[in-house]
Length: 283
Image (cartoon, rainbow, N blue to C red; front, side):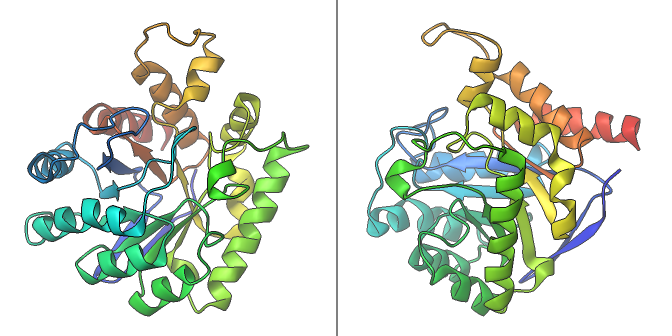
């Protein structure tokens, strides 16, 4: 069903394709759309990171700045203040690799220096061209996510004529930029950026066509967890209480069936069970 890859990291590697890899989300922000403010205390964040590992995650993704619609960028100093102490505190405690969700090369450099092994860049090097050299210097793994527009306009982009074609074309350019900077292709994972500046139908189209990214010869990550496009698909009006877990589960299942190697989620325990059963059925 899936092409198998070996994702090379500074301290080892992860086999991708035989079993769905689960990336657990840890937001150290007061304003993330789903869990803002829950883990912005270092002790709570460390405890949650260890819980994420115990629930079956293969990678921990730590973020210090919300990129939800309407979010406001924070300073590099504030981002470092939120993230670095947690990564340092996890040294020697967490066995799974740590990914840092940032588009700033200075933040990535500091986090890689204290133990992170992956950079998850929502701009695929567009916001900070120096990021490519930082990733190359540390031989880090990197997730190149598709997005359009400047940081403040991520979610204000016009519709695409053909979302699948444009995302594939843009990510091909991102891969070329990374390889030209000296980053090994085996270190690269691609994310089509579902929900980032995309209409609900565009996100659905990308979910239906994950395998369209196969010619780029990189593993694929899909991140749909608790995103607002699920509410739109389900026709649940804004302000109406609902549990996003079920819609998330449906999108994760679709992504795996369509060939995704990694799923990025909040509800690690439940999604671990879902993908393990699904892998057994499909394989």
